[in-house]
Length: 192
Image (cartoon, rainbow, N blue to C red; front, side):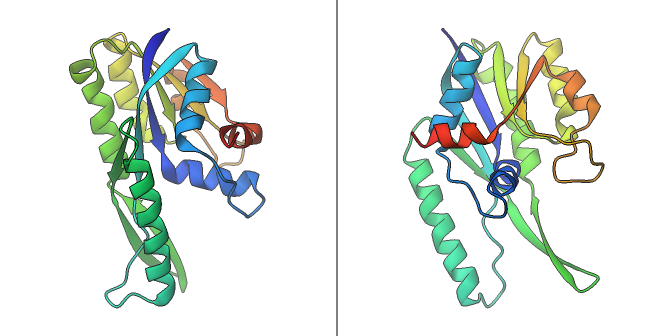
């Protein structure tokens, strides 16, 4: 069985978990989920890169912000104890738009793109990678990996609604070597 590396956009996975859970986050085990997806492709999961951002903290954090940060820190500490997982953290930006608060991760896609580009340099034996995401921003880097003989299998979820949380571009689907839709059962199976 050949080795692979799994790249996970945590923001996407989190949204999908909440969507499948109908407003409540489904529990999942990142390590097991990566192994399941690798096995579906006949590959061995050699390493996992997990891209996320800590929750927003105002200059004087509220009790809720402190609690979210404490839970996040515990989760990241647990993930980081597993030597097969590398955690990359961006930051969380708070935006107030039309009296509505929105939170956006910043820098996460940049870290993911940087690590994807190091595969042919640091992991020369890897010829197939797994990407768990839905962002068309990764098209140029995937095209570059294609030209270097590295195939990308995209595990994703999408719908046909333009502008939704799960509107994946045709360009991304056409750029990867293969795509597989993530299903709710994948989350349940990762908890076994």
